[in-house]
Structures are given as structure tokens and as C-alpha cells.
Image 1 (tube, rainbow, N blue to C red):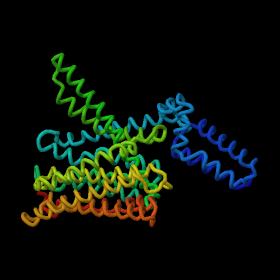
Image 2: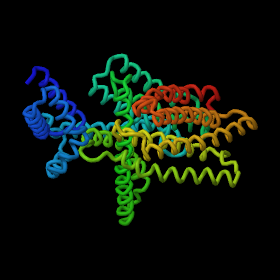
Image 3: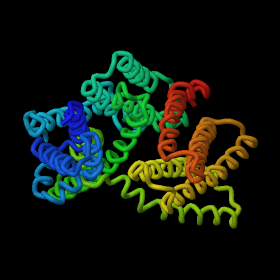
Image 4: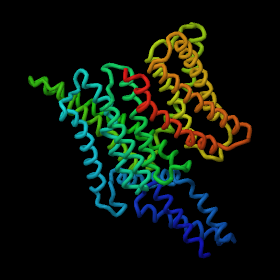
Length: 449
């Protein structure tokens, strides 16, 4: 066997371990199977390099490997699903210990406003709403900075972002019930989440692979968080029902302490579950994207038709504009999750036609929203809400146009699907710049009203 084959086998095994987090015995089993393939191919006259290329190709992608191994040894897979670290040579309770500590810290930070006499009631609710992401996301940032050993310049950027955000949302003289307070509360979590993405990707933030992996991670984490929160709602509801039945009114306590603590701990626990359990079972986000893309497409086409027939100005209220922005973000997310889970060698087929149709339908809806916003700006002038709506719809329109152009180039054979993903990743810093303006600049421009 040539001398350069062993390092390549070691690199292949390291990639499998990184992407699947399989136990050591499973990794060894896979390596033994690869070596058996190599021996058989060499006996047929292939060189070591040729045999290795063919053997690795036959083994399939890392997700395929994990899935096939799960079919062969389901009991072992499910046993590993509930393990926390023994296979990596760490004490089994170590990972769980840290995640419980981080979750408790997030819940404790949520009570800091009480030290300053601010409760969740009345105007204090706005304070909690603006600070909500500051109770959680910095903990995730710190954990991933330590895990990834991020360089000092990145750490300085993240610390500066967190500290500046905390000062802005608590020292800016927001008017109670004002639009800028609400807009900061909505956009700060997005700004901090993009900062968390920098901690997650570390030194690889300039690549395409690492930010794309963070996008996948975010989708999986959202799904885990929804499941956890559903369980939390049931728990809080049962506590209220049982204790009320015996004459102890605990509704306010259960909501403000138990429910709020579960809400803050959820992202930490969800991140832990994604990191430790992904690739052992089919990722949920791409599967759900493939199911809902045609359904969303039908809904959006029907909506466009209804707007054309009814000719009503649906852009007159803030809730509708927010809903449209969420819809456009969902479209971008579904297209990316679907595309990232498909082989790069796959040609332009029906699923990609549906993705392109979804993008085009989203662009039509975005154009309707921009037309309505422009009309209101001409009639009433700028306000915090209309400025935010205009900026975000323009931002999403450029994003969708870029995706559509990239998809058309693929259909014409002038580009690959990797270029579609690259376009999206390269566009992420634009969102970061906009979120910085929304958190720090917009309140000042409109005098915190």
C-alpha cells in the first residue's frame, strides 16, 4: 500500500467522526469495511489511489454512512442517541453538566431586571422584551467561542456587540409603547444570532461550508426548540391546573418564573441536542422543507390571485408587513435547506423548478409589499415602522433576486448549485449591517419615539 493512502484514510475517518459523531467502535467498523473494499479492488488490478477513490465512493456520503449503519444496528444507534460523551473519551455526565449549568444561567439572567425593581408587568414588559435575547445568546456565544477557540479579534467583535447592545437597549430613552422600542426588540435577537454564527464558524467564517452549516444548525435548533417549548407549555399548564384544584393560585408564579425560565433555557438545550444528535437520524429541516415547498407555493399563488381580484390595500397595517417579511424569510430558508440536502451532481429537475417558482412567487409578493409601502411613504412620510418595512423588503428582494438569477444560471448550464449556496452565504453580512442600523441607528434617527 502506497505511503500516502494511510493519511487519506485517516482524513476520511476524521471527516466521518466530525459529521456524524459516531462512537469509536462504529468508526472502526466503518474503517474495516473501507479497508476490505480496498483489498478487493486491489486484487482486481486497481492501483492504491484508484482503489481508494472507488472504495470511498461506494461508502457514500457521511449522512448515508450514518443512516446505513443505523439500519444495520438500530439498537446501537438508539443507545448512542441517549449517550452524552463516553464515546469521545469524556465522562458521560460532562456534556450534560455543562448544558444544565448554561440553561440555569440563562434562567438566572432573566431575573436580573428584578434586582432593579423591574417586573414583567405593565411597562416593565418592554424592558424584558428588549433584553430577552441578551439573557440567552451571549451564553451560546461564549460556549462556542471556548469550543472553537476563536481568535482574539473575533472574540473582541462579539464582546463589543453584546456590551454595546446591552447598553443601547437599556440606556436609550425609549418612549413607552413606542415603535422604536418594539423594532429593537424584534431585531436585536437577529443581530445577536448572526453574531453567534460568527462564534459558531470561528476562523472559517469566510468560507461557504461553515456559514451554510450554521444555517442548517439554526433550522434544526428551531425545530428542537419548538418541541421543547410544546412540552414546557404542557408542564406549566398542568402545574396551574393541579395547584389551582387544591386552592393554591399559582398561575402568575408559574408563568413568570417556571414558564419564563423554560423559555430562556430552551435555546441552550436545543443547541446541545442538535450538536449531539444530528446525523444519527434524518435531519428534520430539509425533510419539512421538501414537504412544505409545494404547499407554500400553492398558497402564495392563490394569495397573489386574490390580491389581483380584490384590489385591496393590504399593506395598511404593521402586522401584515411583518407577516410578509416572515414569509419571505421562510422561503429563503426552505430553498436553502432543500438545496443543501441534495447531491451537487443532481441536475436541474422538478424539485428545483418548484424552488425557482417559489422564489418568483415570493418576489411578486415582495413587489406588492414595496408598492404599498411606497404609496404610504408618499402619503404620510417616513416613520420607524415604514422605514423598517421598506429596508427589510428591499433587503429580501435583493436576496430573492440573487437566488433567482443563480437558479436560472444553473438551469441554463452556466453555473452549479454550489453558486446558489455561495450567493446566499456571501449575502449574510448585509443582514448583519442592517440589524446594526436597526438596533443602534434607527432609534436615534426617530428620537426614540
